[in-house]
View 1 (cartoon, rainbow, N blue to C red):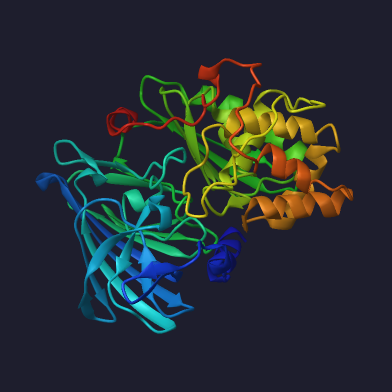
View 2 (cartoon, rainbow, N blue to C red):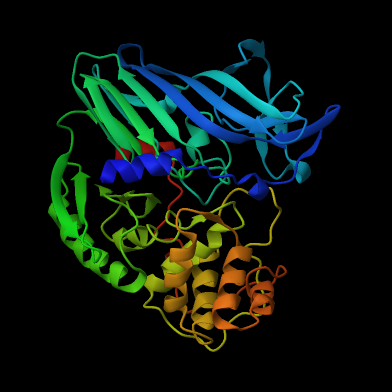
Length: 442
């Protein structure tokens, strides 16, 4: 049954091009966003040479004529379009809000195959004939999703992905991933990720066998399913503490929002504070475990489509963290959390403090937890924007909420005077880790 559900999700179509930013002028035409139908990554690690190489194959569709856009952050990329070499360049968005990679060939609407060859020095950290590589993402700064490691589309797109992974080493390695993992032989793995995943979804970690401590258990969902939980940590931590806390949070969230959205859960327990969520997985400290597990419903169950949409998930998670409070006024006059440029790609750092105040205010108008449960069931595995939330809440409650959203989360440049919590507590759960900190995580 689990594999059948996975297969059905992998074959489903998620057409989200209407959620992409607008095309913009480029050379003698337009730079246009693509709809990726399928992506395959052939990843090879060479620990004896301290390097790695990736061959990426996109099957993509264009709906309008122009120069196709995707993204890849590191230097060094070569491309072939339908078997012929094609230049890949960088291009800035209107207003220089962000930048992308552009295929420097104007194409008619249609379906194409793009093959990309990349070499990334920091795709992994190497030991004596070993690899430790984790595609750990961040959301408070732009270009920190899958595009940091391999070529990928923007956050709006959902498409099935396949990772073919080989570690060219004598020592045995292991892969942990939130997809369907197949082990072919020592150091040779294939991972299939379902079609509702995107650039902020992939959990992928490969490392030498025996490196971490493990504990596993099964949680019984309210719908009768057995949900396997896997916890792994470094040797100086206690995975049993993460497991015990996870069980209580699991029961709390199911009671509030319904059956667990995934058929499994992976916890990589860290000593560093903060964490980050993925569908069916998290890399987190013990303190932030509840925050990250909440995101299984809102962030990775109902998924933000762009940088202007991430405020909802962080505001909701922070509202839950502080005890689901109710406020008759949010405590500030106006704020802009989700009304930035359409090309914005990162979550506003004020989403925790300002967002939770706004949701506490909405809770004085209607039963927000009940509305969220219905919202989750109606939009599960879908990409959403602020407009989706407004429309859903208005239809469910019969209230006119657009003015409140416009003032308190889509407003001008007014600053919040909501000071119930200290400044350093605002973003305690999602930390913008440096590469040096990520190395310590591994």
